[in-house]
Length: 123
Image (cartoon, rainbow, N blue to C red; front, top):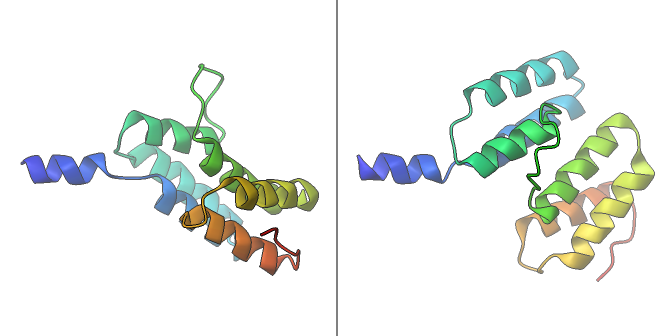
């Protein structure tokens, strides 16, 4: 029983969010929105992860909770790309690369997005 609790405690909203943005990028907008709504409703994990998911789903009003700034920057950049705000997305991605440790996975993801956008990434 303790093993199941440990696994449940380690659940992250990242896989749900990455799948949502992937579906959106593939042009499956309705499927992406439905997926995010369903995953948000069914999510089980620690409160910070659930609040992070609710926040990026646009379902969280100001309650004094603030997300991890690195994750927030990266996912807000993806959201900006999705809505066509490329300039702000690029700025957030460049900030993510500049402020995150070199071995951080989100830094690598931000570098890939910048390369995809054909923007030179800072070193």
